Image (tube, rainbow, N blue to C red; front, top):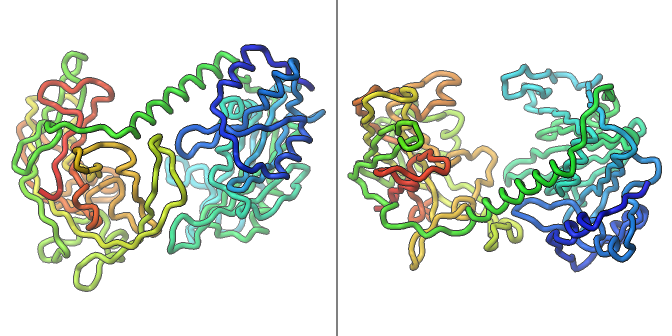
Length: 500
């Protein structure tokens, strides 16, 4: 089956951003020759996304006619391509050959101890083993879904981050191409990895993935799950996206990429973005009256900030921590100071693309104690009574030219220890006026307190910050304008420096 490209399609292909690699793996070239495709390069887009290969646009133009994109009699073509730094699938769907049908997958074998999680639970739709902590997830992609990923240039995300060393086995299971991948643990102190089995049915045009989270099952057991899958191709069909729909999705994707790039671009903050301890901060929580909704009037004061090496239990009871036993205890020394932890340091280029591999650093941390006051200045609570009591710790780039905001500043570091969650999202670890104290409410609403109009609350929050990052740490107060201009008295960015 041949595919003829229109002039418009060829122009669109040539307009893709191409990056020519220094070396092209011989096995990849062989795979392309089998498909009748000459590969020239790969698409390079925003951070962490490798997009689908561009089908030899120059060869198309030179031939002036058509290009074979699927092997004869194959509805789906799925060829594994091994490069120096990645393993990917080159995929093609022959939409003219068959309709896309819905796929239903049911495992007939699951190892002992695994039970299907109930809906509205963390393991809803997954098989979980409470004793081992293992979780098995099964995902099916029908032909229309795969086709959309291919045409949008996103199909390489299926194997994002995988390298040839992660490919452990290529086999055939029930007539389907199968590959078993084993990824490394992202933590320096954990051997928990993820096993992923990918099964492609080229005749029926679908992909089924099996994920063994934490790699608690032997490879033989994971393969046994794959061999026991009951995969039904249903009578119901799924329409392929039209060219117009794909163009619209691509435009939206491009706009999102541009928006993300803007966020990566450092933004010089003005003097009126910064406030001192003792100043009352008026932080509206919604759009202004010009948009038909009255703005909440919640006002905060950071009364004082202390940097501490240790927190005595007599002054900071363990019941006021978010999760002392599960989150804090393992990271506190006998003298009350915090143990050193490991973190990843990332480097980025000016477009927000990660450069090189992250390095591991061992660092010490401090407790940041904030004594706060909040007052509900509303005459009527327009939404509900819940008020966010805590700002979040954010990191800004500070240099001789000023103070800058960018995603790179917050994403420069991440924890490298599996059990380290003390700085997650800049969230406080301690709140001495907890209102929601039990169960799921404590987990979800730790930092919310119901407040009536006119009510005032004084309280103490504690955060954990790496000691070498204290000078870049700022309290950022929550502001939900969602693109609306900040009303008078409000501010898009409201910061109080941790080290005054």
